[in-house]
Amino acid sequence: MPPHIPGTITAASLRRTEPLWKTNDTLAQKQGPRNTVYWTTGERYQGEWSDNKKHGKGTVVYKNGDKYEGAWAGDMRHGLGTLWIFREGKYVVRYNGEWRDDQPTGHGTFFEENGDTYEGDWLNGRRHGKGRAVYGGRPIDGFGGDVYEGNWQDDMKHGPGTMMYANGDIFEGHWAADQKHGPGTFFHMSKGKRYDGEWADGTAKCGSYSEVHAPPPGTLGSLPPIELKQADAVLAGAKKALMGQ
Image (cartoon, rainbow, N blue to C red; front, side, top):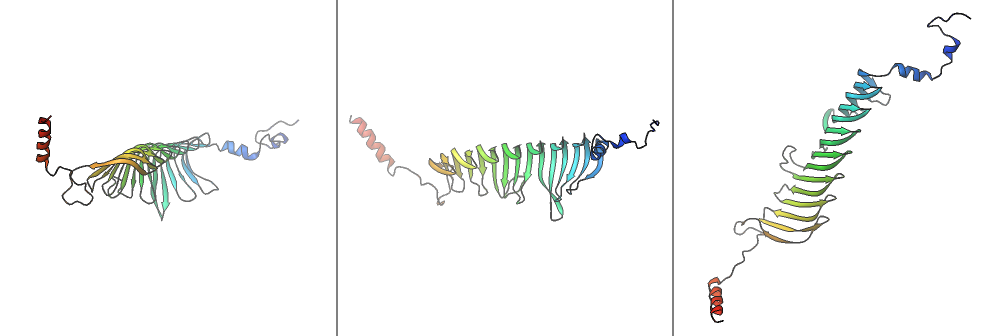
């Protein structure tokens, strides 16, 4: 039997115990920082690897041009990261914050395409916990729009919360499934009135109005003052009735 010379092809070497692709893949295991890796799906990744999976810091550019920059663990977005949306030749931030198992979870800020924003708690990609949403206003302070601050559950306003409307009105109370529900107070600031009552599915069911502050004379919608027209005569009559007892 001829001696085995390393590097030569033999019958034994031709009888592979595993497919060729698997052998080559083992030789190409990615570990640590790597240059850009391209997929046939059109995606590409540049960053750190562990056991042939995206792990550590890295950036993925998706097929549609969107990209994610941040932390990875076990091939999933995990940790702090930013998702960018590619629109009309430029990148805009869609979400910036914490991720867990490829979903926004923890604290983060979401930017809608229409300009609305939400900053607060997330769970599995949905608003959940405490947060602040700005609708139609300036993101930094809500100027010019409606602002909600309070509790969220499963991507909806749920629990105690306050809605500050662009016209100055304010609602403080309970919410359920994105609607006013339960005890609450609605301040009609332009009219100087407040409504304290119970709400169900966004509709006031019972309650009472009172003045928030004394409105200027003639203000439309203000409550009229209630007083006795002849207070002195009424008081004198009451005293006379008591003395006659």
